[in-house]
Image (cartoon, rainbow, N blue to C red; front, side, top):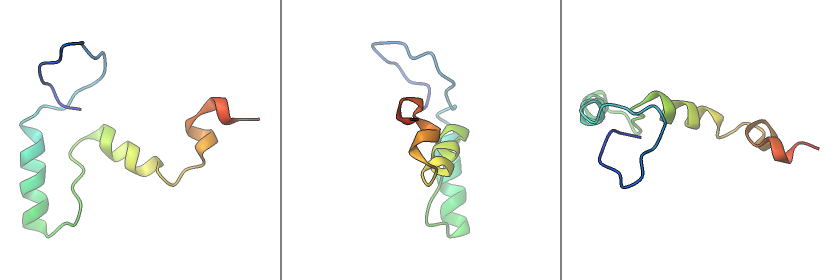
Length: 61
């Protein structure tokens, strides 16, 4: 999530929007197939293969 004007404020950490194109260009120069521009995105990506119950407490039985 980047800092931008929102009609409803979001109380969450936000990346500096200047960091996103810098990360994208660095990735292009490095030949990366994927660029994850902030810590939240990297964390989400790392959790995609995790057990859903680890992410959603309501699924625990």
